[in-house]
Length: 73
Image 1 (cartoon, rainbow, N blue to C red):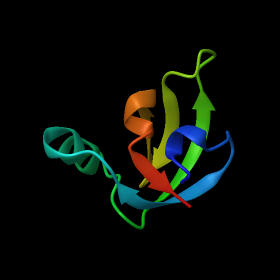
Image 2 (spheres, rainbow, N blue to C red):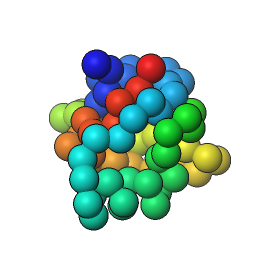
Image 3 (cartoon, rainbow, N blue to C red):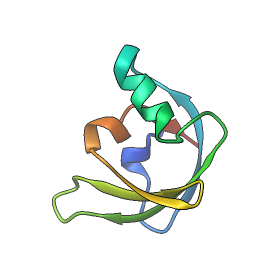
């Protein structure tokens, strides 16, 4: 299973499924990360946390723990 956490810088991936439940999953969906959306990985901080992505035309920083809940292809 590939997650957003394992995606490389400069790669464009597509969200397949959101793992997690309750408020955490709702927060991720509210940020625009829903099934089928394309995500471009812009940068990863030196220690790997956070990950900066472009989704739906805006930039977003995600914690590594949140990126691990997003399954991509």
